[in-house]
Image 1 (cartoon, rainbow, N blue to C red):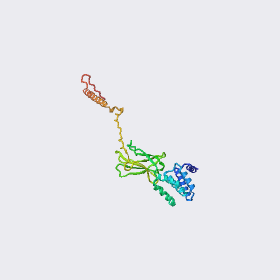
Image 2: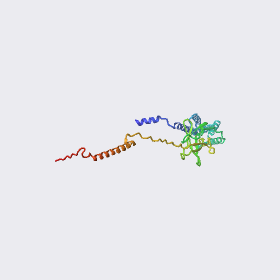
Image 3: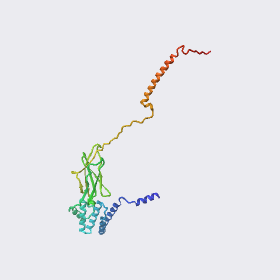
Image 4: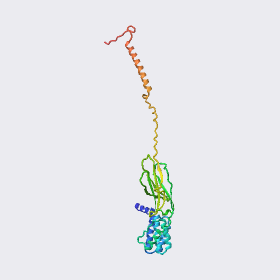
Length: 290
């Protein structure tokens, strides 16, 4: 029963990739509709999918490609041209993914790409943190403005002073729409570190849509040296009296005085005892036992 309950609980929990799995299924469905020449149905399904706000850039561009393909096949030339203009404005480097596309489709995509439509506007909003308050790994955050849904990836490129080239890492997209990446701390803790870095936003094809800083003119920040630790010391207080009078100096002075006095008294007493009374003063009595 416990195992059954666990399975039911897991089935009720929302899947992390449910949304993306859903759009993958929709893409497959539209492809099938195009394959079987159900162009109006494919167009309607593609337009419904594109109305969603949870598509990433790659899935949105794929759906635009399918929509244009169905429109071309259905002889909707003007609509197809508008769709292709949107697609190549979002990603100038987009390549047709259908290897079996018909010649009219291949030709239409080539013309749209060569027409070089004005790319969408994307802005990377970010300011360098400057010198950090403490020696720690800096987190770089960036916010996208404009056609943020055209961006598939934001890359952070950084170089510590003295390194020959830049290290590039893909930044993580957060739930609030911001992108974040971390720069590691290296080198001796007693020395500050200067870091050069720049940011770039790319479309699914890898075409750059926006940048903040460049390799030639990067942004900069400084990781400070580790602050010297202050070790607090205190002078040990004199221990309280232990209650043992033998540890006190006055005790031994007093003992010396008593010993000396006792020696004088004993000497005097012994001397007097040896002298005894003179004969004739008290008499001499001798007792003998028989």
